[in-house]
Image 1 (cartoon, helix red, strand yellow):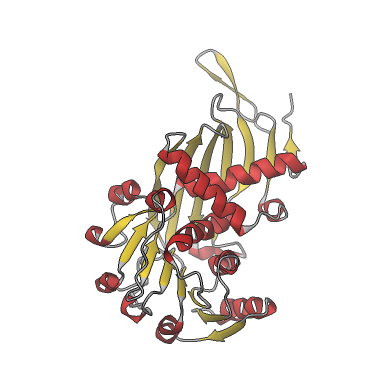
Image 2: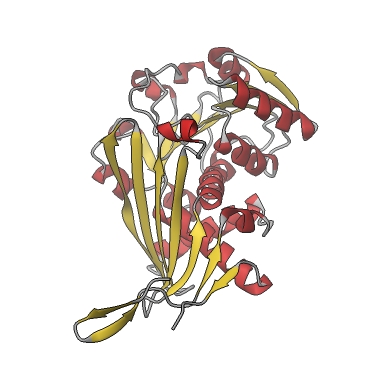
Length: 333
């Protein structure tokens, strides 16, 4: 148990009473993908109206393939400050640990007191798919029936759940580097009553109405996806910073939206050439319907933003407090 710290002659409680919500507890809250997407849309509107404040996502690459990142947001409506710190650790597989891990702090926005500690895996998975869903609601063909997943890990599963709620999906193409993860994902798809086929990347993308790319973040990957393979009118949700896509092919998209233009312009390493970016997610959520092109594909390319983490974490905290879920941590006197 943490003790007390003294700052400027006053007493600071380093570990006040708070709620502990690990990922298994968050999963059992049964929050639907549509609930998460709706929360993200509400947060986008709150930000546009000045009721939600966010900082650009920060990232550090210390070497050995490690990738650490953090997000920070303050919401006036919920009265919360949400801070997330996560990382990708390639060596964790050999250690029997998840390759992506981290934690989230929820603080009272007016006093700074700790309200809750949340696991980061569930929030990261559902907010990423929720961001894609918000974009897909505006940009994708509502009658899409086929979807290709490049990368068959956690994000493939979370995006499958989110996109099944939006589209009348019938067939799934799986493209993965690991036979184990690909087979697991194919079994998951078939258990849902959908057709699943393992394909090479080009064939899968050429046949799909929707594409989700979610490879592990690794800038050493040689790009192997080409936007010119996309069907006319198809939509791609690109969660992996455009790393696996050939940069010179980005012009094949009729429109490219990113999650946050300010964040993208402040980033040292742009995802796509700036002149190809049409707008960002706030514009999509607040600007009415987006004109789709039946002749060319479109894409939502994103690195993740504090607003998505805020929306998912604050929604989960509200549900947990209402249902009595989680463990109440009370420090010793």
